[in-house]
Length: 139
Length: 240
Image 1 (spheres, rainbow over the protein chains, first blue to last red):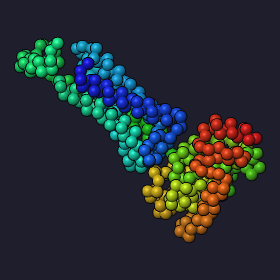
Image 2 (image 1 turned 90 degrees about the horizontal axis):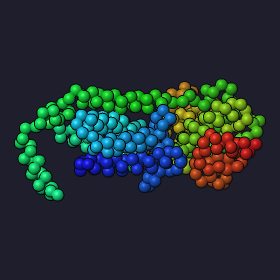
Image 3 (image 1 turned 60 degrees about the vertical axis):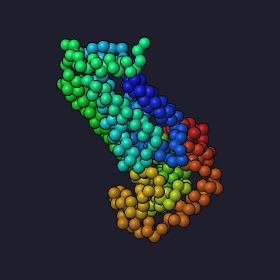
Image 4 (image 1 turned 120 degrees about the vertical axis):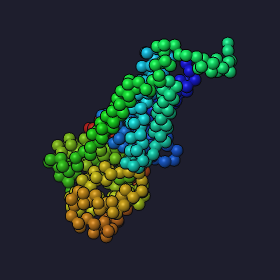
């Protein structure tokens, strides 16, 4: 596995762990550890914390699991299959960036609270997208 | 095993060589393929689809008092003769109060309260700052027009952070206009007609041992936190 892919895998792992924590919080109804502010609580209990009955945190977890799966899988593929996996990774992260951007907009301008955990997940999504772009730019 | 420097130097040398036919290098970069364009369009469409789905999912629910057969008197909903009284101590700026009000409480109103088996009483434990107190006073003003619970729902639906102008006097008057309340609402709020009531409720809450919100009393039995509808029904059944 290339260094950039290992880095991407690390980012996906970190994002996945935070998403796992947020998913656990969602189902347990426990307060998020938010370092002195109640922004996490506000975001977590807002009506935007679920999409079609599915917690957004769980969607994030699925996103990072899929990203990690694609990264591992594409390391074993060759030729056109590998190119397909690279494009799929790019497509997945692009969808992630669009949706994470919307969620951050909601936090800033609609809910009025910026949750550090959610911001860190959004940063992981952006980092994965940047790595996908870098991969495509390499040819 | 080659060192990184050796590998780099080999790669540099190979860049000068002609790419083998059929390889990606020979076909041009991946981002210039029609497939890339297709994936980009699909990915953006998928992201926008999620946003649309999210927006449709967050349409505000109808107001509590729009439920047919409900009788609201001031801060009380439901039949006076109901065997169980659920008293909810709440703060309009508290996120878990909102979660409870828009979840389990709404479910309770639509079923047990309408059927007459539960009477719901809302009490103000306005402890999160000036805007919590103002919001509670505004709900009392709406209560003068028998629209207490409509205003209660509106406050929770508008909740955004704490003491940042969401529940300023101007905003509270705007909510009243949006709900079609009579202009006497403004005079009630400006005149501070319920300042003492809200403070008295807070003091009563302190006396009853309320320290956080939401806190419920089901026929006098205390329950701290926002219960799910299943837990709430268990508490109600135990209180009968």
